[in-house]
Length: 214
Image (cartoon, rainbow, N blue to C red; front, side, top):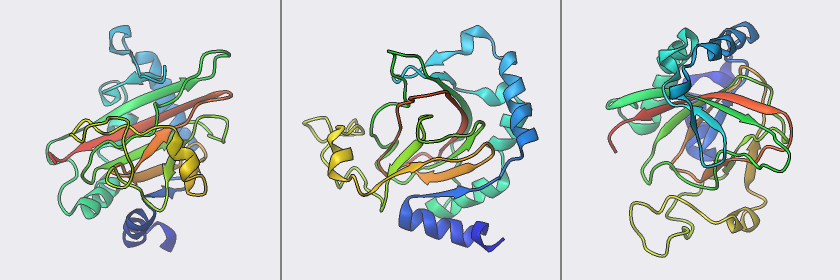
């Protein structure tokens, strides 16, 4: 299908900051990965700043996650975005579980960038995600750390966080990337983005982090 060819995806990421590959994984593949969650030892479970559950190296406990991490087509996308191997240093696949609990807000953290330089990330929704389930959000057309004042008063490498005010300032440009089980989001996380606060149900996802040394 032309809409998911490599050239088209790379062009969309350059122009919009992201691309959603619909139905990249089947429901059966997603359910197999979900079944692997029971294999996680307790000492591998961590909690993010948004109170979400994170398993940093889920590829060690799930063959499906390992396959997602090493997916050649996704790596080709990253290589084209960066102009070199996206994983030339290392890579890992993180499981994220976000559940709604009344009176206890959970999210993927606030508005931020992962890197001041281009960085590639791939995210697989293992559950259906609507506006109430804490979808991934990005400002598009892309906005980087050079385009908006960070939370910190000093400009240094730690300036990766941005105030909630950015959502009001760019309200017409905030894209909430809802999707279905099996959809994959490929994104340049040099651009300002966040995981939104969950209001209902749960969101379970895999995220490939690729480290190229920049």
